[in-house]
Length: 370
Image (cartoon, rainbow, N blue to C red; front, side, top):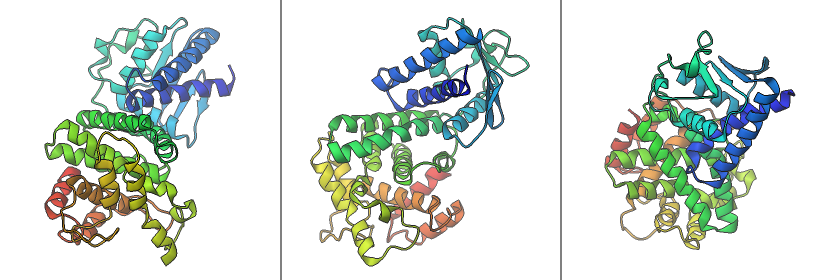
């Protein structure tokens, strides 16, 4: 097989695992990914009389062809296999779609030990023991799923945000809800620190990644506060869409590697109202995304923007989104400054406790990160 064909196999494996978390199991996109992966794996296994994939530190070897480089999908796949203790996968000719799908979901969700898994055409494990059936002697340590949750969600969210802004389709809002549900599921299974979790997305488009990170932080805090799952899901969706108004902001302003001029900053400050106006025209099933889009730059003491005359309290989801928004902005790398260390970020934010940030929610947010 050609090098490109071998690359497509491992690339599709990574995308299928990501898709298994970003979408419900019966979603057409998942079926498309799995079908394409099965066709390529089946073809490769037949041509090579068995498909041999190895994972070594930062690279992947398929049929003795190495793949090393800054490809984010393959990097996440290598990390995933390292977390599971898998160094080698052998796939036999004749593997069925059903078994491959079950294996993808095992890699994506991976609860339990390998001894509980039965495979007819798949063998995996350590290099020295991969030839034993199904890797049955290998007990898996608890693994981190969230890097794959976010990886798949990031790709989906790019399309969702653009489609909502340009086509105003409720169906895309529902896909946003699916992402929030996947994040909620992942956080329940996840043992890693939230701050490390969101740093995994540093390579992606900033606005999309930022929206996803803010969603993760808000979902984590809302869950910590003991809100019902339905309200956690609504708050997560609102946080995910909080910057939707930036779709109308010129890209040269969004990506400018320096301080904005007054005129440019005035344009930037219009995005909360623009986002609320856009979401008002879409049936999101709840008004919360519209509310949070409008309020997320209004501070606890009512400074910030847009300027409001009312003294009515901001929605709790707006407070949480505003805190998460500032936190992720400070922790993220930007062209005009490096990312800030965690301690420095929290030190700066603490100065705004009670003025910029609602004090009790700020204290709780710090607890989310610990």
